Image (cartoon, rainbow, N blue to C red):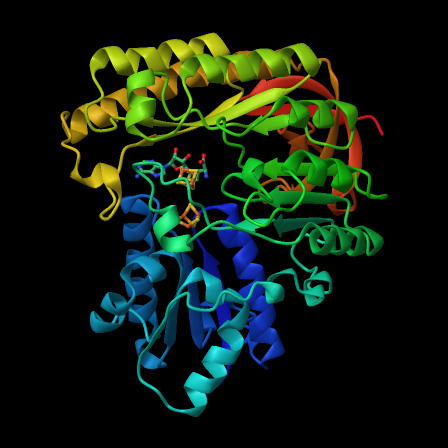
Amino acid sequence: MNRTFRIETFGCQMNVGDSELIRLSMVKNGFMEAANPGDADICIYNTCSVRDNAEKRVLAKISTAKGIGVAKKRLIVVAGCMAQRLGEELLKKKVASIVIGPYQSPRLGEILSEFIKNKKNRLFISQENENFAERLTPELLENRDVEPWHKWVTITHGCENFCAYCIVPYVRGKLISFPSERILKFIQELADSGVIEVTLLGQNVNQYGQDAGDIPFHKLLAKTASIKGLKKINFMTSHPMDFNEETIHVINDNPNISRGIHLPMQSGSDRILKAMNRKYTTAHYFSIIEKIDKIIPDYAVSTDLITGFPGETTEEFNETLEAVKRIKFDEAFMFSYSPRMGTPSYSMKETISEKEKAARLHELISVQREISLEKLIKRVNNREIVIAEKVSKKSGTEVAGKTFLNHPVVFSGDINDIGRETIVEISEVRGSTLFGRKII
Ligand code: SAH
Ligand code: SF4
Ligand code: F3S
C-alpha cells in the first residue's frame, strides 16, 4: 500500500500539540503527508471526548471518509481522547483499524509500520506507556512548516482535578509535569531557531511541578519570559483554584507575556461550583479578578461557562448571568452541559429539558456578545502589538492575528506580515473582530 497520510485534529490545543508529535513520528517512519488530503491512504483522526457533539462530529466525518475511500482501501486511525474513551468498541464497530490513546501520539509512526508489516486487521493500544521523554523531542524544532514563528509547548499531561462533569482525567490520565530544565532548554532552542511566540499548555498550568517537586508555574513562566528572542508568551489553561498573585506579578513584570488571561469560571453559583467540584467560590474568583485589575494596567480575561449543569435552577443560572455582567469578560466559551458516562455528574439527575438548557445557553451568549463588543470598542484608536497568523482567504490583501490581549484583529497586509510583530492602529470593530491599519 502507498503510505500517504493526513491528520485531522479535533478538540483543544493539547490535541493540536499531539498532532504535531503524530506528524513527526509518521514522517520519521517513512510516511508522507498527502499533498491532497482527499487522496491520503491513511486518515488519522485526533479526537476529543469533552462533549457528546465533539464525538458525534468526528464519527460522522469518519463515515464520510470511508464512503469516499471505498474505491481505494483506506486505513482509518482514531487517536486522542475519544480513542481512549471508546477503545475496543471502535474496533468492534469497525469504525477504525487502529485506535490509540493520547500517550501514544509520539509513537504512532512506529505502531503503524509494525501494523502494516504484520498485516494486522485491528489494533487498540491504550496509554500504558508513560515515557514522556519523547514528547519534548528536539526534532520538533525542525518541523516548523505550519507556524514557523509559534510553538505549542505542552508542560503537563493529564489532569487529576476530577471536575464532576469532565472526562479529561479519565482519558488523559494523571498529572505529569515535564522537567522544567528540559522545557526551558527546548524553548531556548526554539527561540534560537527563530520562534518568537510560544504557548505553554496544560489542563491546569497553575499546578505545574506539584507532582514532581519541580519549580512552581510562576517561576517557569518568569524563566520562559527571560529567554532572549521571545516576543509573546501565552499560557493556558489557568484554574481559579491555583492561580496565584505571584503569577499576576510575573505577567506584569514581563512585557513579553500576553495580557490575555484565560480563567474558566464555569458557573456564577457557589452551590453549582461545589457540585462541579471546582474547589473555589465566586467570591474567590472575583478576588482574583480584582487582584489582576490592581496589578496589571491593561489586560483581558476570557472564560469558559457551562449552562444546565444537573440541578441548576433558574436563580443559579441568573447568578451566572450576573457574574458575567459584573466581570465583563472579553470573551467566553460557553457550552450546554453534556453528560459524559463515567464522570460523577453522569449519575446526577438532570432537572431541565434540552430545550431549556439550550435557551439558557442562548441567553448567556447574547449577554456576553454585547459585553465582548463593548470591550472591543474600547480598543478603537489604540495602537496594539499584533502577531499576524494568516492571510485572509477571502481578500488575499488582509491578514488576521491577535493583539497582546488576544483580541482578534484584521489589517491590510500580505504574507510578509505573517509571524512578525506589527504595530496596528485600531480603527473600528466589525462583528467580533478589530480592524486597523499597520503603523510599523
Ligand atoms: N482544563 C480546563 C478545561 C478543559 S475542557 C479547565 O479546567 O478549565 C474545556 C471546557 O469544556 C471546560 O472549561 C468546560 O467549560 C467545558 N466542558 C468540559 N466538560 C464538559 C461537559 N461535560 N459538558 C459541557 N461542557 C464541558
Ligand atoms: Fe477537566 Fe477540571 Fe481537569 Fe479542567 S481542571 S481538565 S475541567 S477535570
Ligand atoms: Fe477534548 Fe481531550 Fe482536549 S477530551 S478538550 S481533546 S484533552
